[in-house]
Image (cartoon, rainbow, N blue to C red; front, top):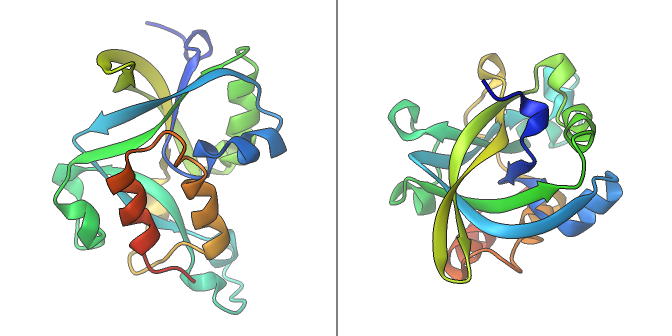
Length: 180
């Protein structure tokens, strides 16, 4: 079985779609391209860490981070605009070295179970052609998920940082989502 650190591709569907975010996190990459994950839907169901620590500060307890769930498992927490589709678009990032994934692990809170890292097959769209690529992805910790959350404006702006590559319709749907 392929070791995770031998896979150089990472599929980002949340804030890491943004080049600035990757720069802030000192994650070095070779390329970014458009890709999608089939049979999944985008949701914002990972509570802000202040909720996880049970410290309620202002609206933070209502803030959710992005997650993708298998369509079969999806409950009523799915955002209307994305219901019609069982595809999550994102950015396929070719990492420069295998160390980069450990930097991402740190920011995604792997150690604390905020997200888990797994492998998926995504469809990369490059120059009008599609190809299947094995990529690393982060899924939010199942026992932490909560309905009724909304992304913060700041967080949503990071997602919109992927609009240089994302399909226009998908970006429009993201822009229509309610934020805190």
